[in-house]
Length: 391
Image 1 (spheres, one colour):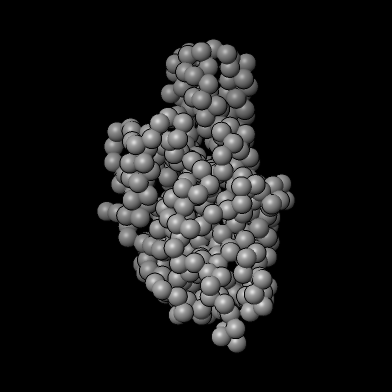
Image 2 (spheres, helix red, strand yellow; image 1 turned 30 degrees about the vertical axis):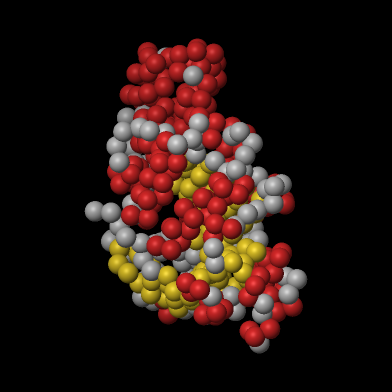
């Protein structure tokens, strides 16, 4: 009976979200990539963590090399937000909501000292061009002769071609990249002297990202998610190692961020939960009615609606703005919440696209689990709307 549920355990002001000081990584999942409110949560939750936990680093489920162009922009580089968000690598991020987040980060950085500046990075590895561009730009400065040779050897490896390359070509590119990384390690001192330590570290990880992209392409369909989430996990570890010790904010699909896997592979969040334990804090999102941008087999987008009523999202009617945030450890002190948090229910896990057939069964766009098994807290909506694509 929902009358026994104490709604004072919830908050509607996202700016009040704060995580324990022992937390090193906060993950924010989204029930669907193509939802406006979930993209707005990227900005609102990140702002709360900047204010309440001293967070400075935003890491998205987007291209490592492409996100470095966003990073350059928020540090005062040229261009505009609408252009740079296109570099993140997926159409789902070419939205008004993402541009607003990036502009907020740039404005914030204009008003703080060097040590307090925010950073924007990517943890995915499905693109080549921007990683190659950053890598060769650094090598051009320190190893011009070798850089010219590598440029030639990597010419056929591009975003447009990587999906069509045969196994033997991919294997050869992996060998080339491994040679580049060995050469970089041998010439580290010279590269650091010429380009700086940070440029060396990021260029080397760009090379590693190209290698990972080729390896993912070599995978079977069965292995793809296993390998991709392992590599994203390694990226988060890399950022922990190269960061300033402040909390990292990571953002991706609910299925990647959850502390337990919902698919037939070990997801990024489960790996972080295993390695960091209490130092990983995961927040999920869900809605009773989801209007989202859905991609079809031709790559075109249209607005699709699916419904998924569960014990969490029926409570939105009780809250202002038809949304609330609940932190499960706090809420479990209340008997009504204890039952809701711990009982299996269907939670949104919507793919980039849903066919008309897939919309007929919730098994295609939700996963059954107890909310507190997957997340430490959730932001829950009654109804959510589609993102606004940039022209």
